[in-house]
Amino acid sequence: MIILEGKKTANDIKGEIAIEVAALVNAGGKKPHLAAILVGVDGASETYVSAKVKACEKVGFDSTLVRFNNEVTEEELLTEIDKINNNDAIDGLIVQLPLPKHINEMKVTEMISPTKDVDGFHPVNIGRMALNLPTYLPATPAGILELLERYQVETSGKHCVVIGRSHIVGSPMSILMARNTNPGNCTVTLTHSRTQNLKEITKTADILIVALGKVEFVTADMVKKGVCIIDVGITRVKSDKTKSGWKLLGDVDFGSVKKMCSFITPVPGGVGPMTIAMLLKNTLMSAKRVIY
Ligand code: GUN
Image (cartoon, rainbow, N blue to C red; front, side):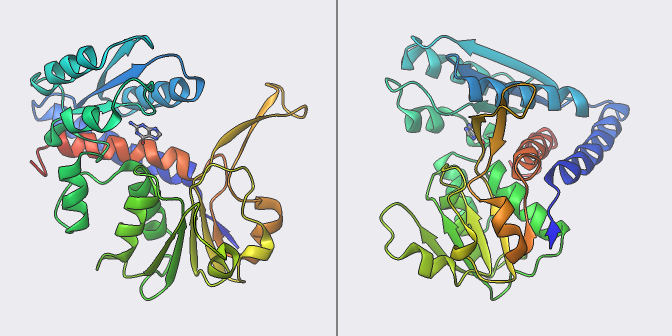
């Protein structure tokens, strides 16, 4: 069983990006610049955004964090996005999700210029992804592809089962794994809350990608021997065994499932750090005008 070490791989990628940034700046270019919009005071979003800002510093990017309180109107948010879209100093813009209920997330996503959409969530970029055209890939699915590639996990002709159909992970992941690319070329089954006989399906998976947000949902009896498991779940639960009083758990019961696996990602230190590394990669691509 091989652990897919996301934390280490993400650090390698950040090192590669830092070298490129230094070369850009040495050649008289400007530093890549990421802007992030954070609405409200959701604990998890706060953690993710501060990790993104810190990662920018680490690789030599500029970053701008724009905060709004929970009562911000959709109009105010759209106006800020328009301002950033038109600010030539900023290469990439993300709006941390989820947003408060009174704001239409799709309207916000569509307002971000596809050229600065380094989350890869804009319908134009999702369409380009589906058509295998150059684009910004959504960061979490891109991080998973990068792990599969760097650890040389064979995907061609394999049965990939995805649990969860979110716009951020499950849905794009299913498209990417079916594309005629490497990694890719899988036969893909996308499962979700209405799927019947889930266990019968997961037991046939060569690659199982789990992104449903239910702690330790996947157990050893649900998988076949030799499976490669990618655990996207990350939930904070109370613990009397850690100093902080909290621990992070995935969607996979790592302890019981690992003996069945050829490869598995840990939580924490698996997919999470890769998401941030790929966001940086997309921002660097935007600064270098690789796509648009
Ligand atoms: N919320 C959870 N994951 C993500 C992500 O990758 N990007 C944004 N903007 N919000 C998220």
